[in-house]
Image 1 (spheres, rainbow, N blue to C red):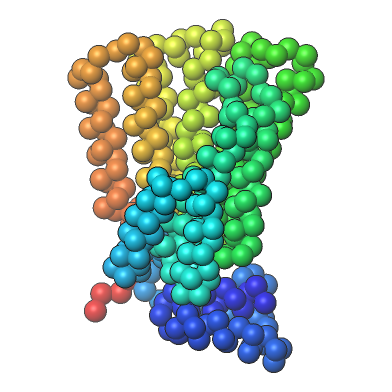
Image 2 (tube, rainbow, N blue to C red; image 1 turned 120 degrees about the vertical axis):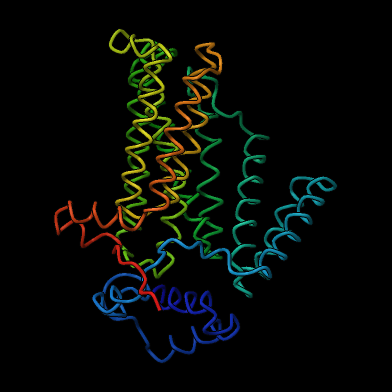
Length: 372
């Protein structure tokens, strides 16, 4: 039934059927024993892969939550109404409004962009709720207490329930990311408890950076799991992977930033600004190459935004002034972005040809759209 629902949701997104017709077709087809043949979810398995690859493939990452100005207009109304309610009513009055709007706009009318805005509103509401009852993580992760774990634990529960009801891809992605954050806090607490030192991570910053890196790699692996399960980008698995990649790139770059910032003896030379900045730039270049291979511009864009914050933090920490070195770095990064952005598909074909066939065949194809 889940696979059939995904196919009908995709038909609604492509405006092949109305949302009302999609809602009526699901129980109609289910009662008559209609199932989706083959493994996997959605339409990707329902069509021959070779025939699908022969179709025009000009852009495989068009955000499916932006479908028209009608959705934009409704989203503006949602944001303004919730903002006014947030200012006038108590925190608990906002949740019923989110639920009512989700029932109308998401469950009944299947509006994609309002679903994203309502999911973000629920995330903000959850953050305020958890902050009211529990204290967030302490500075520099010096002491990971029970309140930090309890603060994070509310996010996967609330977002998971929201996804179970409304099937919004962003909700599942945020649920997965918050669940990994919960695993991170539990792991840090376990290591701190085993050491018996409340300042364990202040005394072992490299270990903290490695733990962060492992969790970031876990998030990236989860995004790849959803991506590789829908290489032709036809189902909601691709939408979930889109949001997970948006979170994976900053997490990976933040982990690298931690690795080159600790005060250990191994990387003391990296405490200078002139060494840190090229390492961050190289890390972003690697992320851009990975995004090119997996055909995820969102992964590259998120990494570039994180690059700006990372370089700003490095120069602020080193009390450096904005000089020719900074502008040269910006020019180099901007040139790389323009080269990759304008020649995305040709570069993908070159990279995929260099990969083994067993790997390239599991990735999205790099076929340019046929010119009329």
